[in-house]
Every structure is written in C-alpha cells, then in structure tokens.
Amino acid sequence: MSSELKDSYVFPRDHVDNIRINLQHYLWVAQFGYLTHPKIPLNGAHLKIADVGTGTGAWLMDLGSRLPESTQLSGLDISSDALPPDEWLPPNMTFRKWNIKDDVPEDLVGQYDIVHVRNFVYVLQDDEIPRVLDSLVKLMKPGGYLQWGEVDPTSYRITKTKPGNRVEELDRLMKLALSSNTRLTPTWVTILGTIFQEGGLEGIECDVREAPPPHINLAVHECSLLIPELLMRATENKELAQRLADTMRQALEQTREGAAWTFTRLTVIGRKSNVV
Ligand SMILES: C[S@@+](CC[C@H](N)C(=O)[O-])C[C@H]1O[C@@H](n2cnc3c(N)ncnc32)[C@H](O)[C@@H]1O
Image (tube, rainbow, N blue to C red; front, side, top):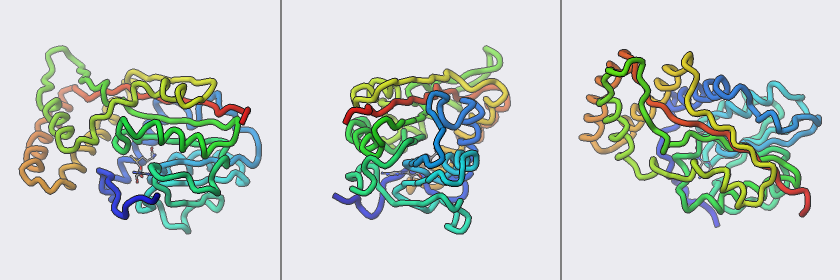
C-alpha cells in the first residue's frame, strides 16, 4: 500500500516553518537537558539510528555531531523539502522517503538500535496510533530503543506573571487556530506511556515536564505563536486569515504584559524485547 502523492501535513515546510522546527529543537533540548534519554545506551561504534518524521533533520544531525562518524544516521520522512541539500548533510546520514502510515519497507525491518519520533501530534490521529507504533517497533532491532517526544495539546493553559494580566486574546487566538483544522485536536499524547505498554515495549519511562523553566518560557511561547502565523499564511479561508491576524496583534500585546500559552511536554522511551 503506498501513500497518496499529496500528503495532508498542515504546515507549509517553508523557511519560517523550518525556523520554527529548528528553534523548537534547541528549546526542547534546553528544557529536557538531553538528546537521548539517559537510560538509552549510546556505546558502540556502529549504532544505527532512525529519526522518523525528521523534518529539518535537527535532532538527528545534532545527535550525530556528538557520536562517532561510524554511526549510521537515517532520516525518514514523507517529504525531504525541509532538509538541507545532500551536500550539506553529514556523510554518515541518509534520507529515505517513507510515509509512517504505510507498511515498513522490508529492508528496514529490525535494522535500528534507536528509533526517534518527535512532534507528530499534528500528523497522527487517535485511531492511527496503534498501527504506527507497530511499524516503529518493526524498525527496531531486538533490544533496541524507541524514544518519542510530544507536546500534549490537552494540557493547554495560560500562565501569567501577575494574577490580573489579560489573556482573552491569547485564548481566542488558540481557539481560532484549533478551529482551522481537525488535525489539531488529538488526545493520544496523554496516554503515550500506555500505548507503549500495549505495543509490547519494556522498561518504559515517561519523562513529563509540566512547563518550560521560566528563563525559556517566553521563547517557547513565541515559537508556538508561529503556528497560528503559519496557519494564517496557509489557509484559503480569507475571513479566518483576517481574524487570526487581528487577534495575533492583540495576543502579542498580552504576551508582552506577561502571559504565555503553556503546555506539558513528554519524552517516552521503551525497549523492544530481546526475545523474538
Ligand atoms: C513538526 S515536524 C517535526 C520534525 C522533527 N521530528 C522535529 O521534532 O524536529 C513533523 C514532520 O513530520 C513529517 N510528516 C508528516 N506526515 C508524515 C507522514 N505521514 N509520514 C512521515 N512523516 C510525516 C513532516 O514532513 C515533518 O517533517
């Protein structure tokens, strides 16, 4: 079964989207303090690592720059549009086009010591998750690790520097953005640990961060504000685009007064059984 030619990704994969993904990566690492969870062993000169939905390749290339050049880095994605040209990729990195909703290509089954997925919340719907997890486990070697990081959209709230700060326009902006696409309201992230369990993974650890530390709070919020900005540019609904633009102006004022969208983020890891 192969995917349709035109994928249904809600973001434009343009330079602003890439800036958002790259900034999001560095802020993510600043918040969690690691690229791979400390319980994942990184010893071995010939590790094979896959990053599914690699986007700009930020996570994979950042990790690769800290590991021996004999490590094999595989970026998988439905599109290579966000990646640098081949000439600017590290020599030990390859890209492979793969739709996570399709069958796993035979030659990739059981290949990887580490499989990484992050920020797929706006890509996958609740009913697609069990099959996707099954495919990710198929990519792994026996004893290999899966690391999956997400923002939990159900944890959305607004934090303020002072109790009296205005937040109405920030809240309106969030609701407008969510109304633009049904893909923006999935609920599977909250139960990702249980999903790992049901998928047969072992040694599951859920690293849950309720909110970014204060020193990066504004940067994380401003990075999230790029989402309505991108939706505004991408939507064909002119009325919605205008409402998003008007609300954005006021939401930015409320941001400067000391209010920010806040989300719980989590990194879940699990190990594939050694017994096949
Ligand atoms: C928000 S980006 C995240 C990029 C990267 N994982 C990160 O955290 O920096 C989501 C990525 O998923 C990719 N994607 C969307 N639908 C996909 C699918 N069905 N199969 C594989 N990748 C997909 C997009 O092309 C995009 O690169």
